[in-house]
Image 1 (cartoon, rainbow, N blue to C red):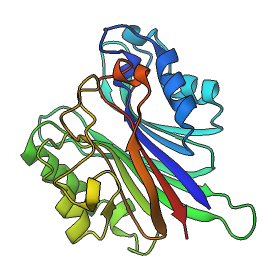
Image 2 (cartoon, rainbow, N blue to C red):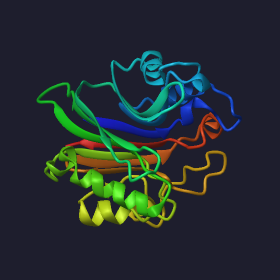
Image 3 (tube, helix red, strand yellow):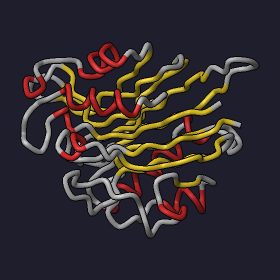
Image 4 (tube, rainbow, N blue to C red):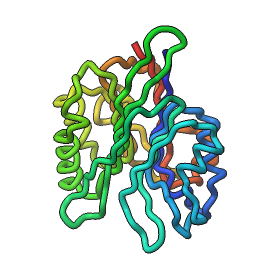
Length: 248
């Protein structure tokens, strides 16, 4: 079966024009039509985004029957974090705390997804949706925390697994940890290496490859790209990355 994955920092649906416009995010995701969407900076109950639960709103507007939210940051009113939308059942979910010392709270949302085939047994996919910190040291420590988490460390390398999100990794220092030490491949680097990440930030004229998708196990990469819709240049400060896979 084929599976489309998107990772997208939606910036609370506040565009580079500083306007809250959830409809632009809906247009982009509706055009791309991912089976699983890994979203970062998703508000819930915050005045800046109309006091809405953005994960619930997006799931309803786009027709996703399953979604999970991992809140990381508490605001004066409301909170925000990562959200995973899925066309397939989410069997398990947990938010893994990746906060380092007194730095801003960060997290990785783990979901176990049962991808349904038309015939035969379903595929079980372990999905990790993260948003890492702003300093290189902090990011390395956060990846170490993820590696030690029960959800990640208990996995066999042959099992279908995805790690995606906003890595904030301007210098592409993290891909070797995933590809050389953990047995992943990077869907969002041209040629599969660390030197040519797909550029996603800032959205209007991207120079940094901050948003990445890694995969291992029963996946074969078919295609990967950024979104080229004009509205994606203004809807958020990041571009979404899109990866198409065949589950084997």
